[in-house]
Length: 191
Image (cartoon, rainbow, N blue to C red; front, side, top):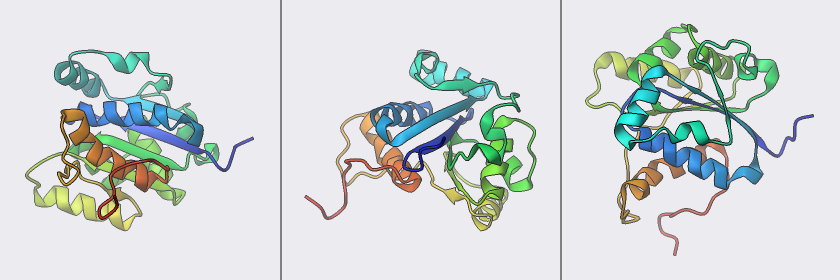
């Protein structure tokens, strides 16, 4: 039986640059484990390559969360009946955004996003491309109109981040807030 006080989260990691965002998100979700019932992860092949290139390791293999194959349509979050209430795509490539905006469910990431949108649950896309073409902007508009949240990987600096992880945290803490998880983080105007 599902614990309605705890979150069931899908995390998809695509091959966009910004593996550090996924790494920091995974670390923080481990710290917030008492608020989370389960986390299911799906990574593209490019995501694994980018992680190894940018972070110099394959630590994603050591996570306490289950990683599903990108073609595993038997994963629980491939169906709305599994009641995963939040999906985060971090980082989200423009190709993944385009497929979601077009309703193309050709892998587990896009199928899970389609499920979350059709069930009127929370879809958070941490897009990390710049500059943006009109195609990208229109795809973001389409996903937003369908109920998704576009949360660009645009770090903030008012907390005076001291490291790459601190900088990534300025984005990830917003993602965790959007997902409804309680956390201690820098809040503007608070001491």
